[in-house]
Image (cartoon, rainbow, N blue to C red):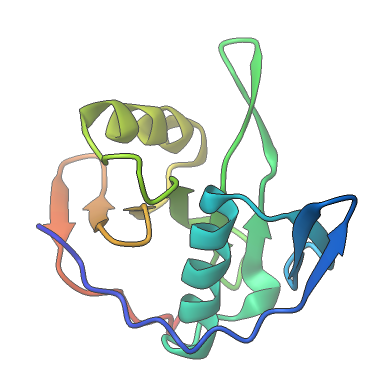
Length: 147
């Protein structure tokens, strides 16, 4: 089930250095090289904060996980007020088709974090699932952050 996300009008800060473009990431509080995947991540996180009223202070971006002795980085995680992982977010560049391989990659991160929600986006296509030990349910709207 596809999910429609309302994106706010972009109002990002940019800079250019040696021919490369950078975007200011308000979550990491630094300029990050602008790639198609980063564009998706910044717009999605901005939507969660500005449109869906998620607390920016409870969103972590690109943190490291150890999975089977390998170091991996998730794109973003929204935490609940007790600092438990609440929503895992995986972003892909717009030209990447979201498929079973994308879902499997995300579920590898999920096994470590055990979030109730998993969101996958390439900026144009979005999928959101509610997951618990008994079920996996596709959702058609962003859950309210009222924890």
